[in-house]
Length: 92
Image 1 (cartoon, rainbow, N blue to C red):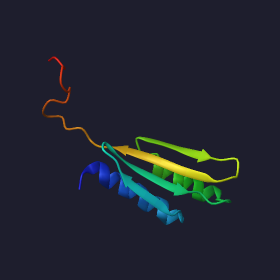
Image 2: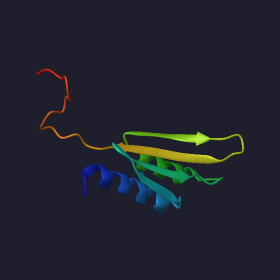
Image 3: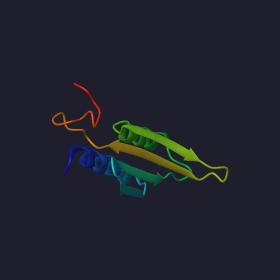
Image 4: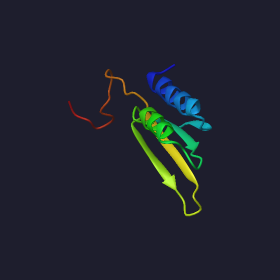
């Protein structure tokens, strides 16, 4: 399993341990994790949630006017340090 997938699974597991139902989705170049955040969530649980998503490459919270809250995090695939990482047209 790639390191990025392991990191995403670890984040999802930490969020689940706090009591959040998580969804993990594989994309072309990343793994996305989403969780609905119930109302209310204790200060301790928020700390644990933030510790979990702090290991992601990007994260955020989508809040709607109807008080729905969705936490999201993205872990990008690790790029190999070997081969043509510059892509076509990249000059060395």
